[in-house]
Each structure stands twice: as structure tokens, then as C-alpha cells.
Length: 409
Image 1 (cartoon, rainbow, N blue to C red):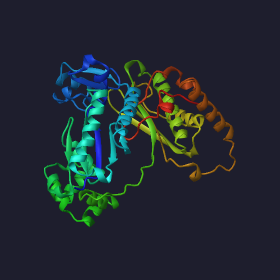
Image 2: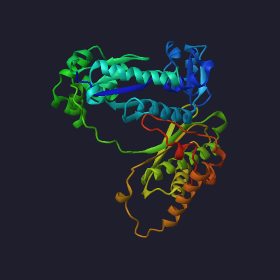
Image 3: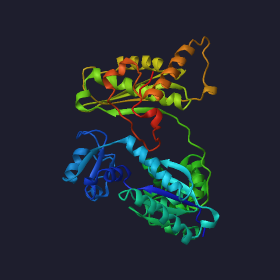
């Protein structure tokens, strides 16, 4: 056997946590939504709801049409992060976690003496049992393979509560029944590029030459895909943050310009705390607006790298004043900080008078950590303190100490 990796995928994670904490939801179709309005969409669905065609991205109104009995539940992201850490502790009692891929996926390396199918099953059964004993509604699919890529592929083949093995001896034939979109790393754009190159099936993908995939991917990513499909343990360089930001769909009462602007201030202050916590400086701020009834607008500003909240708020105000359709109601707003650099790579100012501002930032961050988030903040966000709560993305698990409804200098 050549089983080296296992991947654990918590099934319908957000919905499963809610069903555990609220017994009245168990066995019923549940959709998790950011806000309680029909204009939003489901960010998760229980398996009972999925049976009716409700999935991630389904609009709340459409979900009610597909499944009239669906129960929509407003997301509690702090709770999901807390349970994420509880579940990781349970797994660590069985096997060491090498890599946290997302809020609902972790990967582990099997010790050399655990790499037979029988021994791997013992580990998987122990993990599943510990989770079941703690929270019976939270199920997981576990995949085993020679690398993390194939272990993840295996975990996707049987849901919920699956246990699937992919061994080198099974390759590549065991993959032929899959669609290209089922292969991790092949999204809509890559699928189009593969088809343009004459590759329409997974069998054709597995049969392609390494040089051909290098050309299709436009670089070493194609060579990595070639090796991963063959069970090689491919080194993936750590992904560095390229952007930091937040967006928020506005409930009806916040769709007037005054309150929408306050939400933008809150989003900017949240993003800047993350920026400092990660020891980054930003060289660009981007603001996006979505108008009620249709239409979008965005603009950005290039700046000398900074992590000062007040400076970024000044930039935000200038972008806000440049927006068109100033009387139109807004449906959603967003702020993104990009061109991120570490302190040693930032451009130094000729006359750096920023030390007082940075001292203030550090002091206010410390006050919020010590006495609770939102104790100190810039006044532009005052009317939006209860807006834009913590959100979990596919690539970012919030730090509860610094990001839980945090407001800072």
C-alpha cells in the first residue's frame, strides 16, 4: 500500500453545527444565510435541503421555492470557528494535523506503520467515533491517498460520512469516471483552456504529457498537476496573502448612503486590524458598490504602503466622493486592500512622520484586545457597529482574538 495522506472533510459544516446546537433543526432542511433577507443567498445547506436542490450560492428566495419547508438560519461565524478548533482538538487525539486547508478541511500524514488499509481504517474509525461522541450531527468524509490532492479527491467521492481509498495501484483508472470539474484545481476557466487544447475528459487529462499541461496552465502549475495525478507528493509553496478585505450585503434599513458609508468605514477598520496583525502594509485600496436594481461601480487608489487606519479612511472618503449615482440605493459594499508587502519590502518615506500614527494604532489595538472588541474605533463607523459581522471565506479562518466584530483605530 502507498497510503501516506488522509483528508478530513466536515460535511455541510455550518448547517451541521447548527443542527447540533439546535436539536429542533435535526432531520430538517436548513439553509445558512448571511442575513435574513430574500435578496441574500445560502452559504451552506444541510443534506436534507440539498435533496431538494438547495446548495451553496442558491438565493434565499429560490431556496424557499425549491424547498418550501426550508428553515433559514442566520450564520454565526464565531460559533463555527469555535467548533472548528474543538474538532481539530478531537482529531489531534487520534493523529497529528499537518495542514488546515479551510474551516472544514484538514490534512494529516500517516505514520509509516499506519499505511496499510486496515490500519488506516482504524484511524478513520477512531476519528469518526470521537466526533460522533461529541456532536452526532457533525459527520465527516475521510479520504486516503498517496498525496493530499488524491486524499481530497477521495474524500469528495462519498458524502456524507464517507471513507474512500485511492492507492497508486488504482491510478489512473479509478479517476476516469470523474468529470473535469470534479478535479481540485480545475475551475471554469481552466476547464475552457483544457477543452481548447482538446482535453475533454479526466482520462484525456491523465494521458496528457507534462509539457502539454505546462503550456495549458501557463507554468509549473501544469507540471504539478501531472505529478499529483500520478500520486507524487508535490511540494506546494506556502500561499501568501495577496489581498485583505471585507464585503457586506446591506439589509434594507442600511441602503441609504449615510449608513452604507458607515458600513464601509467599519469594513476598512476591520481590514486594517487584520493588516497589522499579519504584519503587512498595503499599497492600494479598492472600493466596490452594488446598486439596488442592478449596476455596479468600483474604483481604487494607489498609495505609498501603509497600515495606518486613519490614512486609509481618508482614501476611502475620497473614493466614496467619486462614486456616481449618489442618490441611488446600495445593495452591497466592499473594501479590499491589495499590493501587500512585508515591513522589510515597503517603500520608506523621505520624511516619515508616521510614527505617532502607528503608536496610536498599536495602543488602540492593545486596548481592544484587553477590554473587548469595538471599545475604541473611528467615529465614521459609529452607526454600523452591529453591521458586517465576522465572515468565514474559503481561504481565511478568522482569528477570534483580533477579528471577532473587531473595530480599531
